[in-house]
Amino acid sequence: MKSALSIKNLVKTYPGDLQALKGIDLEVEQGDFFALLGPNGAGKTTTIGVISSLVTKTSGQIKVLGIDIDDNHSLAKKQLGVVGQEVNFNQFELVGDIVRNQAGYHGLNFKDSKKNAEYFMRRLDIWDRRNEKARTLSGGMKRRVMVAKALVNKPKLLILDEPTAGVDIELRRSLWDFLSEMNEEGVTIILTTHYLEEAERLCRNIAIIDKGDIIENTSMQELLARLEKETFVLDLDRPLKESPSMKDFNCKLQNPLQLSVTIRKDQELNALFNELSNLGVGVLSLRNETGRLEELFINLVDQEQEETENHNETLLEEK
Amino acid sequence: MTFSEQINALLTIVRKEIHRFTRIWLQTLVSPAIMIILYFVTIGVIIGSRIGDMNGFHFLQWMVPGMIMMSVINNTYSNVLSSFFSIKFQKSVEELLVTPVPSYVILTGWVLGGVARGLVVAVLVALVSLPFAELHIQNWPLTILVIVLTSILFSTGGFLNALFAESFDDVSIVPTFILTPLSYLGGIFYSINMLPDFWRTVSYANPILYMVNALRQGVLGTSDLVSMNMSIQFALFMILFFIIILFSLSLWFLNKGKGIRT
Image (tube, rainbow over all chains, first blue to last red):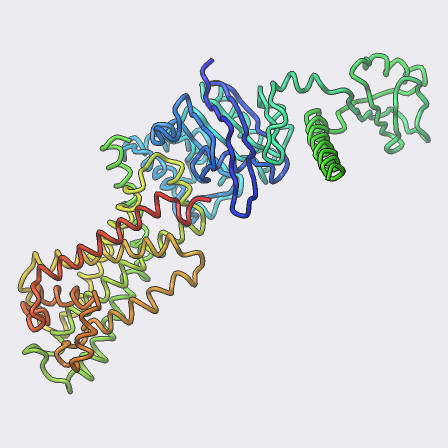
């Protein structure tokens, strides 16, 4: 499969010797829906900034659909649509003008700009707002304008930096559906997000970046399979005074009607229900205490932190 | 980007810029016209009646090219400066940076937007001067050429200033401390023949003097250039020279990402 994005040994050092990217490598295949996750300040936005030329790289190579951005900057950018983290359009302009002008900047003539802008504004349900000033829109609607703007030149690679931050659940879900449709239509999508549920639901592959390094890069399926244990919250059919004593499961009563149980990867849920049933406890419903990906993400980032601290301690001892 | 795609991008920027200053016409078009009317009333009519003729012309007639030039300089400079600084400030410059549009198209687009405002303001100032002074333009091509070249020069200057400006304070430094003094001392109200020798010689270093007098030459058919023994070609060359310098600098800094890329 041809690569949609190829990053090799990308380094970005900001003035003051702040190394935001320490030589990262990343491959995203065409047609993929890819998640780039990491804590705040990990280097996600810098990576996107370098790809979209908002940030000047210190060294390294970036290819968009096989085109080196240093060799053929213009052609590489034609393949690219970017939705930034912050609203970055003139809020005093009309919504329709903002989207149409973006098509014009890509070199489309007035007629095609109008046509493409209408197509994407209709698909994103902002067509009716085209004659309104952008500042009158809600946060969610502004996000849709950003997405329409990024797609108006029909890019093959769409990069979204936290596209649903601060957006209500309904709008977020409709944006998820839209992005899934775009991906099915052949657009490669790279997403950064703090909502791990979003990444788990949408993305097939994932990279985790922390302190300027890629610490994990694998398929979502493979990553989730590594989960050693999961914690479930059970809604009980009757109130309990104390946590039931179970020999194989570690459990904790959160309140008289809710019990949290930690289950290892090699244990079956049936065994848990049997044990609870033997104790006369009925279960009405159950859910994950935290998202599965969230648990893995925290483990990976903590592990990285621990390794860095150990390494620093060793260095100090050697000195 | 192909040539036709670059033209499409350029037209988008110019259209957007013209739309911007016409949308806020009260600030961008009416305000300079009112300011010029006040100059005509206070300096031209009230004080000017005691000054008498200037190089054989009524003082109000002498003022008209100066007023046009001052308005063109201020409006083209501030148009591009405030427009580009505001897109930097609100980060909508990113809209352009993520596209394949080349730097020279971006710069040319903003400059042409400034030129459009310069031309509209020049026409407005000429119109508001009609009740005060008779206006018989002696050399139309020269008049238009000087206004267009000056608009290009100061639009480019405004762009360069916008690249370097990091705060609203930076936006007002050059217009307040450089452009306004140079305009007032560039012979917009007077002939440099009225100055003592020393100050007349110092005035030769003021580039705005050549622009004001080149326009005066086009409008009135005579100017201080004659007494300075300088040809109109020299004045036009000076403007062109500064355009090349400022355009090259702006393009270089734009390509380097000065003030717009981290």
